[in-house]
Amino acid sequence: MKLWRYSGWMLLGTGVIHNAVGLLLGWDVLGRMVREGLWATVGMDAERNAVFWFLAAGFAWMAAGHLMQTWIRREGRPVLAAAGWYMLAFALAGCLLAPDSGIWLFFPQAAILLAAGRRSAAAGRAK
Image (cartoon, rainbow, N blue to C red; front, top):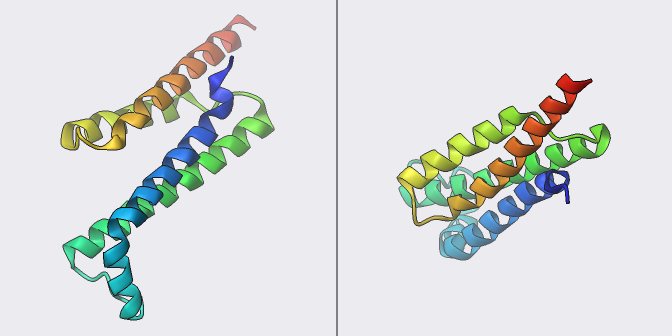
């Protein structure tokens, strides 16, 4: 089974899970922001910034996953191995700083991308 064919969906799913957790944990903060009219309600407040950036990261992963899956569908091959290296670096840094978080979800995704990129590069050299 070629797991790389689903790597975009995996990243998109990670973003969805991330935002579901963010909404669940940040519901009270978001509620206060909505009651204040949303406009310019983050400011320099640490709690509000944490919720905002938590959700922003999830949306960025969803967008990246969608783009990745579009590439895979159109090209019929894995994304560049560099994406796997970036994801691995992100996961390592995240585990160093927040080992009790869900950042570990990026390790298998990075491994899938790196393995697919390696096979793709080897196949390209064999031609």
